[in-house]
Every structure is written in C-alpha cells, then in structure tokens.
View 1 (tube, rainbow, N blue to C red):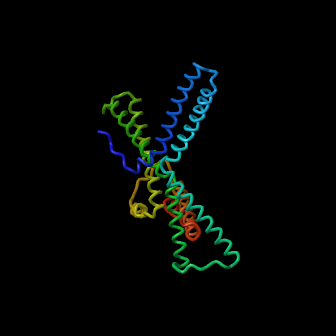
View 2 (view 1 turned 90 degrees about the vertical axis):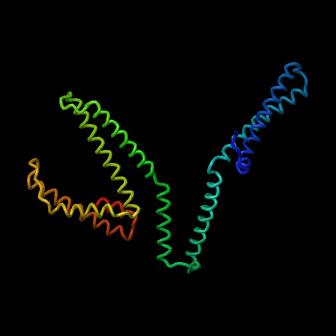
View 3 (view 1 turned 180 degrees about the vertical axis):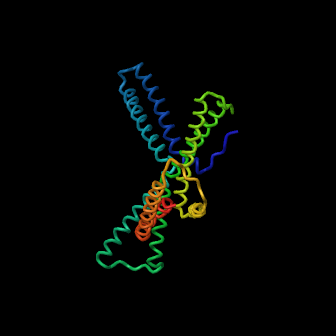
Amino acid sequence: MPAKISPEARKAQEPIVSAGKAMIDGACHMVTAAKQLAVNPKDPSTYQLYSNHSKSVPEAIKRLVFSIKDCAPGQRECDESIDKLNRSIRDLDHASLAAISQSLQQRTEKSLRGFKEQMIGSAREIHDLCSKQQTHILDLTKTVAESALQFMYSCKEGGGNPKAPKHTHDNIDTAADNTMDVVQDLLQSLEEAASQAGVVNSMIEKLTKSITKTDEQVMVREVMSFVEYQSNMVSLAKKIAMTTQEMVGKAGVNPGDLGRLANQLT
C-alpha cells in the first residue's frame, strides 16, 4: 500500500515534478518533430517546431536543477537565518554610528552585567553548535571499539596458552597497550568537553584521590633516583603554579579557557 503524502510535502514536490514533466514532454515533442523533419527536411514549419522544442528541453532542465536545489532540505531555514543575520548586522552598524555620535539609546530591561552574561551564553552556544567536538568523540569511540576488537582477536589467537609462540603474546601485549592508549585519549576528550561545559565533579574527584595518595607509602622504582623524583616534583609544581596563574588571568578576560586550564591543572 503506497504511503500517504501530506499536503505540505506535495506542495514542496510540485516545482520538481512540474519541471521534470516539462523536460520529458519537451523531449518527446522534440523526438516527434525530428521524426517529421527526417521525412520532410525542407518544411519550414516542421523545422521551426523542432527548434522550439529543442529550446524548451534545456530550459526545463535548468528549471529542474533550480527546483531541486531550491527545495533541498534546510534551504528555507538557511534563508531565514541569512535574513536575520543581515538585520543584526544592520542593527549593529546603526548602533555603532549612534555610539560615535553619542546618541545611542540606553537599554533598561537588563543591567550591563546581564547583557554581558547573555552575550557570553550566546557565544558559547554558537561555539558548541559550530565545533567538531561531536565528530571527534565519535571517531575516538570508533577507534576504541576497533582497538578492543583487535585485542580480542589477539587473545583468541593466544587461546590462553602460556606456551604459545612469543609473537602471539607480543601481539596481545601490543593490542592491550593500544587499547589503553585510545581509551585514555577518549577519556581526556570527554573530560575536556565536560570541563568546558562547567562539569567539575570528575576533576574534584581526581584531585581528592591525589591528595589521599600522598599519604600512602609506595615502593620507589629503582629506575629513578631520589634526586630524579625531586626534580620531577619541582617541575610539576612549577607547571601547577603557571597554570594557576594563567587561570587567574583568563578569569576576567576569556572565561571560556578556564575549563581547559582546569582540566590541565587536574
């Protein structure tokens, strides 16, 4: 049973259907005229008829192409957005001229702070809508799945046999390391996205765990001396100080960077 077409959809399809029908009709008439012209090539009226139909076909094709492009999804919405943006640009130009001539009217429905917060919120929303973060996270998620799949294939090849060939165990170790690396990349991207959106619970939890770990006794690895551990601690402390100082500076100038810096500090 054929699906029912709504009146709105039928109306939207009308220009395309009409142009397509005109193209087919023109082609049929042109073929008929060509057949008659082949029988009587010296008849002026037949030649004129063929010429008219040969012109109608490319015109119908142009109409069809234009209709398909004009009726493409989102065209009306894009046109409305373009009109709104042009009006906004004109309003901003008028406001700039009024400010130069000191005749800009004061708005009383909000305070200066309220307008600033509204602008910051709008700018962040535009940034979120135009960023490629969603595609990036989807790509990373797919990479994690592919790495986990390769890890499973390597484990299956090993079969849990400790006496399997060395290259089999090497493949398992490599696949496991790759999976851990891509999962870490995904976690970092998700944490950065969450910090940009103002979600700080995970960062606070990490810092709390780090504070707790400072009271634990750990075995010092022999690959590093105590002096090297001290050097690393001093280097990290300097980075923490620099990041903290940068956060203080960005707080009043570019608050949008605070999420990234907070994640870096964590």
